Structure formats: C-alpha cells, structure tokens
Image (cartoon, one colour):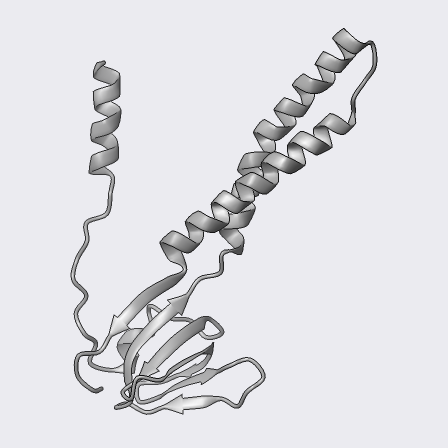
Length: 161
C-alpha cells in the first residue's frame, strides 16, 4: 500500500507547472522557440492563417513558405499568433514499436500452442499477431500524439510588434 501511495505521489509531483505566457515584443524573442524549416501556422492581424515552412526569421520580419506556393513575408506589425505544427509520425512509430512487442510475444505463444497441440508449426502467427498489435499500437500512438501535440501554441501577440 505504501509503495502505491509513493508511486502516485511521485507521478503527481513530476508534472510540469503551467504558467501564463507573456506576449513577445519582437520576432527576435521567437528565435529560441522556432527553427528554420519547421512547419508553422501564422495568423495575421486580419485573421487569415497560412501554414508552411519557416524560411526566414529576423528581428523585423518572418517568412513562411507554403507547399507549392510563393513565400509570404510578414512584417513586424502583422502577426497576431504563431503556432508550431507537430507531425504525428513519431507518435505512430513509438506506438507501433510498443504494440509489436506484445504482439510478437502472442505470436510466439500461439506458435508454441500449434507446435504442442496440433503437431505442426505456425510461423505465420508471428506476423499476424505482431502486425495486428503493431497496427493497433501505432493507431493509439498517432491518436495520442495528435491529442497532445498536434498544433503546439508558441505565442499570441496582444499588441503589434
């Protein structure tokens, strides 16, 4: 019982504290949070949004290049929100790897069952159970990654730069 309480206490104390984010005064303050080539979503002061790769960031301007379109440069006074986009691929891969392990163990158990009870060997059990559990784990990882990190908020500007 004490071990369970210690585990719950450790989990509760290990979480990050939430803090309000203060508005930035210039694009130069965005440089630690963003890297060139990263996919971002920029909302300008008129409310229109553009998604693309960050191709330039200086103290006075930001350049975003959408897929198959011309780059768009935002001036120091035209941005109201910047959001960093996170791919779900890493969540899928982590979930698939986590699902493959128990799937391969189930495949091994089924193969041994076939060998002992049916007198034959079922090598396809590894692929069936490993593939199914890996696909389910990948789907769960993809879903969780999207729920947690799909669009990571970077900054909201309360006043113009």
